[in-house]
Length: 110
Image (tube, rainbow, N blue to C red; front, side, top):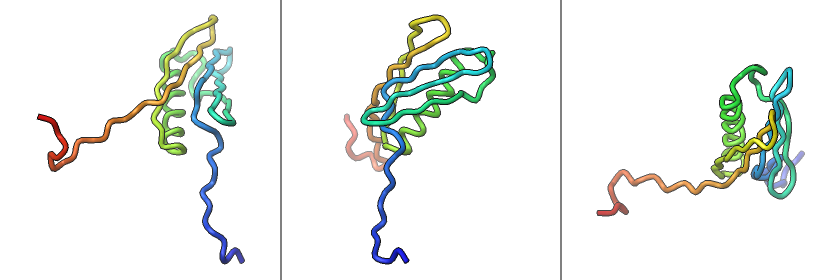
């Protein structure tokens, strides 16, 4: 069974993230992200509710960046702002990564 069927690449569950919202609640850090095209997601950051916001932002960003790189081959960066106490909005942008230098020295400048 299944002979003759081509191998299809499964579509990623969401597009490239473009915005993330982080909320501090009494019991957890909650987030929602919106992605290009379709999709997004939400959940809790696996950190204690009394963790420093900078640490929570870093953990959330690392997870989103790793998923985006794995699913879409895109590196991202985020700029955080705090529109209201207890909430932060992260604007996500694509990052262009320079090609690594060749080990044989070819292609280098002077």
